[in-house]
Amino acid sequence: MPETNFDVLICGGGMTGAGLASVLAQQGLKIAVFEAQQPDDFDLSQAFDLRISALGPQTRSVLKRTQAWQNIISMRACPYRQMRVWEMQGFGDITFHANQVNASELGHIVENRVTQLALWQVLDEMPEVTLLCPQKPLKTYRKNAIMYVETESGETFAGKLLVAADGGQSIVRQAFGIGVNRSQYQQACLVVGVNTELGQQDITWQRFTSTGPQAFLPLPGQHGSVVWYHQADEVRRLYQLPNAQLQAEIMAHFPQELGNIEVLSKSYFNLQKQHAQSYIQDGLALIGDAAHIINPLAGQGVNLGFQDISSLDAVIANSRAAGEEWWQG
Image (cartoon, rainbow, N blue to C red; front, side, top):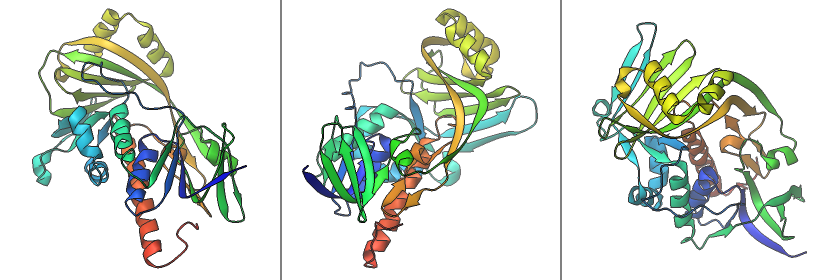
């Protein structure tokens, strides 16, 4: 069985896996990325995807290290300059403004698929990176201090470091016997793509209620995303409503800051928190959802994955500079 050797094997080519590959390649490391599905091409006429994230300054700085951030801006992103958080029943109310930190914006709302595609466009131009897609790892293991990935196509790849970036149900994490602590939030999250009566907004807000948060994330033009946390049964009921009835429910229960809306699309998911019992072993590292899942907090969760990228990149760089075996845990 033929073997192909790399410095780093990354299982998962989503935002965190592709992001890690882009920065490690800048260290001159030879990278293989395994991903089952190619990102879709982008066209401005496409409807906004419901899976969006609020990318903060640290995440943006990682993306700026390569051409990825410029690629995102060339597609579409919405800057927000204010963030307001308040209680429906209580006195807590705070607004953050970019001016307070001498910045032009606090962050950007970006569709996840745009971020992933922007990173893949960068990886396609990097000679250090081999994108293996569609390739699904069938087996991952350690032998004689070398990490191996066997794919469904029958190929075997060897590397010094194996990175699990394959999501909350990580097969890599399971293969190496790393358990997780998991619990349910007893809530679900309804995500609704809307057209807004108001023009382009530069504020994202979140109101806390007795049944869960309600949030609004602006998108380019008069588009936005409404996020409604509630008990799972209630979220399913809302999801099943015709768009006109769902619109009426949102208008009745959301604050007036939202303004009039038109429902365009909707989806929902159950909320859980999950934490891997270990992030590393010799020759193995977990990042992103493979390591931890938290409440998405109005699209903020992806920033945690990019902090993983920055931390692992720094650890490897420092270890290499010291002449150490950087792939050892």
